[in-house]
Length: 171
Ligand code: APR
Image (spheres, helix red, strand yellow):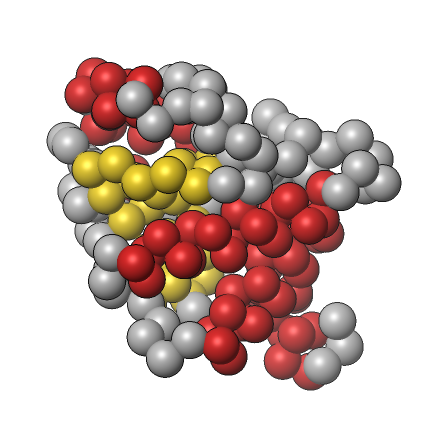
């Protein structure tokens, strides 16, 4: 797993993950950036795959993106943490990795799902991202190269802290 900083739409990976909405419509944030870079064919492909319930994932081609595929997953909206948010966020990472394995993808890049418009606290979301990916790595033989793509330095800090804690066995 590598933590990197930058624009996910610029990455040359087999797949980038979109923090989507249940209707799989072009939105704001990373979703808007991915749809803009992929071109209108992405929205057309998404129409036939919608709806995508929270926690689930769908795959489309990448169209005009450098990345070959987009895995669309819908993170939970943060409602205070007592409404199943953690399990749903973990499901986003796990279901995206399942789809990547089903398609024999060798590399996948995640944004910090739910931490923007959906309001999930970054420190808690980072712990879930890291622990879910590490647990998946322990269960699968064919692990793709995974990038956690941060759009800000503070997101990177949260993820690095979470990874450090996981490696120390303190989370
Ligand atoms: N590359 C990488 N990360 C990005 C980019 C980008 N180009 N643009 C934004 N981000 C980061 C944000 O800084 C945040 O850390 O992605 C993370 C997720 O933020 P959002 O895109 O707001 O996603 P989310 O909180 O899951 O909200 C999803 O927003 O755009 C709509 O359709 C989307 O309704 C859905 C909701």
